Amino acid sequence: MTSSSTDFKLLAAQVEALTSERLHWVTTLANTSALLAQELNGINWVGFYLAGDFVDASLPADELVLGPFQGKVACTRIPWGKGVCGTAAQLNRTMRIDDVHSFAGHIACDIASASEIVVPLHAKGRVVGVLDIDSPLPARFDETDQADFELIAGIVENALLVAPAT
Ligand code: SME
Image 1 (cartoon, rainbow, N blue to C red):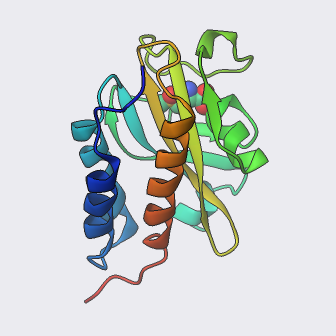
Image 2 (image 1 turned 180 degrees about the horizontal axis):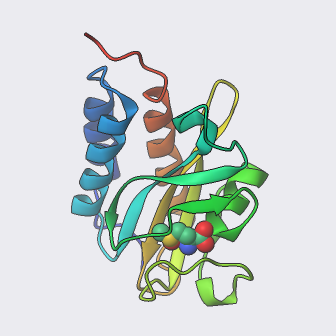
């Protein structure tokens, strides 16, 4: 199954609109996760993990911390290089996992999850977080989805460093 029933052109325009409001990234990511949860079919979790030091200088740079999301309560800290999310962050590449149970080190937050895609987010020339999407369906995400989510992530990351309008 793919997300072919999703109009990605429209979705990209909606994400663009959400990210163009010059709001703090917490606000932008909160609404973006809500939009993605609303518009994507066959998913059970969608949201963001962010590099600790991107969120707050007092947090470790070698951990991802939970950001805005939609879905079940999730693990709050993921070491850089661990799990699907930490691996995507460390390798700076999208991880598309057809069967999460066959991925050594997968971190199960929702036991319903069967497949997952994680796309790195960049700012200041480095990885500052990831977009994580889980599905209860095996092999839910295909190459087209990957390209579409990488496009969405590119729009989102443009908004990460925006100084909020007063
Ligand atoms: N499965 C992820 C953890 C985050 S949850 O899916 C929301 C991982 O292995 O990194």
